[in-house]
Amino acid sequence: MLRIEGLKKVFNPGRVNEVTALRGVNLHLPANQFVTLIGSNGSGKTTLFNCIAGVYSPTAGRIRIDGEDVTTWAEYKRAALIGRVFQDPLLGSADTMTIAENLTLALLRSRSLGLRKGVTRERRKLFQSILEPLMLDLEHRLDTRVALLSGGQRQALTLLMASLTRPKILLLDEYTAALDPTTAKRIIDITRKIVTEQEITTLMITHNMRLALEHGDRMLMMDRGEIVLDLDAQQKNDMTIESLLAQFARVRGEPIHDDEILLASD
Amino acid sequence: MGGKEYRGLNHTWLGFFILLALLGLLILPGIGSLSVNVWVGSVATGLCFALVALGVFITFRVLNFPDLTIDGSFPLGASIAATLISSGFDAYLSLPVAFAGGALAGVATALIAIKLKIHSLLASILTTTALITVNLRVMGRSNIPLLNEATVFTPFIEPVRGVLNQLGGENLVRLSNNVLAILLTGAVVLLVKLLFDAFMQTEIGLALRATGANPQMIRAYGTDTQKTIVLGLALSNGLVGLSGALFAQYQGFADVNMGLGLIIAGLAAVIVGETLFRPRSISGATAAVVLGMIVYRIAIAAALNIKIPLPEGEVFRIGTQDIKLATALIVLLALGVTQVQKRNEG
Image: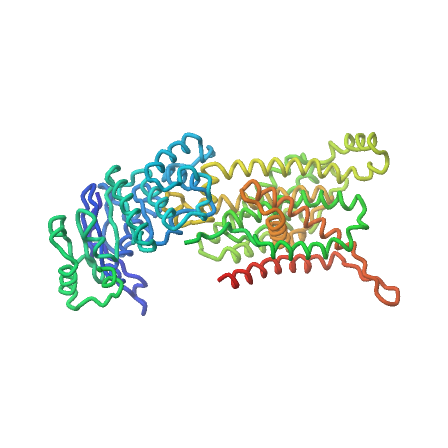
């Protein structure tokens, strides 16, 4: 579904502040896989996401989604293929607009927009039927402005919007990190339900090692712009947080100093 | 986690009262002695300028893309209308052409800002500066009188005079020009407002609003935000061009300088409307900015009527030369109060 070959990204090339964020990433995600991705700050996880989504154009390498080479496509053009949820719940929806208006925009993803009415009666019915089983109490608040929702509700809405039109790939970028543990678990449960039902290939960045081990069919670890560890479901099941930390220290050549990762491990 | 509030200014009672006090200070001393004709004239002028307020609302509020081009697109609309009419074209033809001219000016600013990555304010100043030449070239001189030409108002003036004469004789007939302007521009403004409200609910309208609220998000859903910004600026400046065409025909001439400082007047109207009427929806907001422009024009008319007796029998009067300062102070105060409140909350 997603095939990445030799992906490199250098920021400010040739300048004093030159940074190599990705140094040759190769990755193949088969369809329907749920993959977790861990790594310390600055390891290149988010840069990888930005390259996949088309926010950055890579310095070298190719990106294929569902067989199509999208390397040079602009972000808005790739939008039909990719759903994305960010850490900040404020980023995923338009806060001055209502739930129904936001969902309508998500529903119209990459279709040519017209002078037709945006929020139609049929669309409202559709949104209600999608929101109801999630038990977020949003199905009767379609005309509420998103600014009035809680962080958890906004993140759930973003997730729903991102997956509404069955994208080829769903990118989740530490999307539960800003939520309290109960809400975070709820959101992840909803995510599993949606991606399983809709059969969406999912790549999830997390700082939380437990989360990375507990969820998904495969786990990747990035360090200094490279994928340094790739565990399948079996290997992942056999892995404990302690052995993962030891593995991480081995591939890095030094123990982890990243507080966030250590804290998140217990 | 609390979300950001609706991006309107001064949605607090403090801002409301400060603005009310300020308007009162301008209006109350002069309002008692306002003649009926000045009242009616203020409403007529306010309606002529109402589309400017709507244009400012589109760029500053909906699109979140501050644009000063209206200082140039307003006289452009006026120049185009005056030139067409004085060359013998039908006055009603001047309205769509003025809209198109203004829209082109908006497109120019949008393209400069987007393609060359120049800040929107600088891009719009560039366009406005260039438009001074364009306007002079369109008119061939710095102003064109329209007093003896057939304007959009001409076909209706006799019927209006007749009706007013029936109703109240000579006293009302004196008001006929302004009454007609209120009826005709009011109809145009109402039509534009209703069309705009409906447009904001369409798929493209939603994308336009989302471009202002969260451009990153709407790009992720496949909207080319460059296109929505071009569209928004074209719409905004098109309405301002239309407004210029209407106002030139109402006041009876077009002048190359008639857009000077108009952006601040437009902002003042938006702020006054949002503060006084506290709209909760898009259609409420468009009504509020239209009414805001009318209130603003009445405030100016009242302020111009203030007479402060000085010793030795002299009288200090607020003159038209003082209006720009007063307007700038209103906007400054409204913005200042918002900033201070933000600081106190944060």
